[in-house]
Image 1 (cartoon, rainbow, N blue to C red):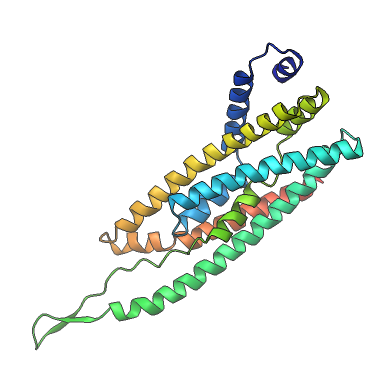
Image 2: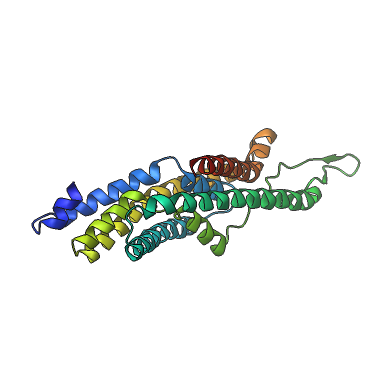
Length: 254
């Protein structure tokens, strides 16, 4: 195994190992899972900024790295190499249940935002008197205001996205500890998390751009404006559906 050769032989290339860890993390970030779903849904259905994207990516990376370290400590304390296979399914189930809760909360917030938007949009449908005798009514297409993606909400989404430790990263760290290369193992795990963050960050940036461009096209047809206005609700329903499917799958795997 590449990592084993690196840890055993002093002449191994640390840079190559870091690159492999980065690529493996990127592949993990690009693989199907609730991490990208949460990122896309939360940013597409809210007034997310590039700063929030960075915070989200960093939170996912830090959470994943800390999760791997904690699981490694538990494995070493219990002296049971099979423990990760016993614990991880329950961690996955817990994360999936949190996804369901996030989806339900996104739906609630979207419904609340739409009701507030309707209240503020009504005065916009007012009469513009082109002359004093024949006033005309001009309804203005109105996009419901996006949900405010606060710093705390962003961090909580990132924690859920990086909550489930990856088995490959855990094995690398345990091997590093076995070969008395703890610092190198932690660095490899952190690089793995960085790979995940880079992919999720790229997805988040693309999502913010799409959301921003959609918000700029307010002069389009009324149907397009209504479709853009439904994004927060659609995003919440998508997260809720994904969470329910993942929770059911996790329960079957127990």
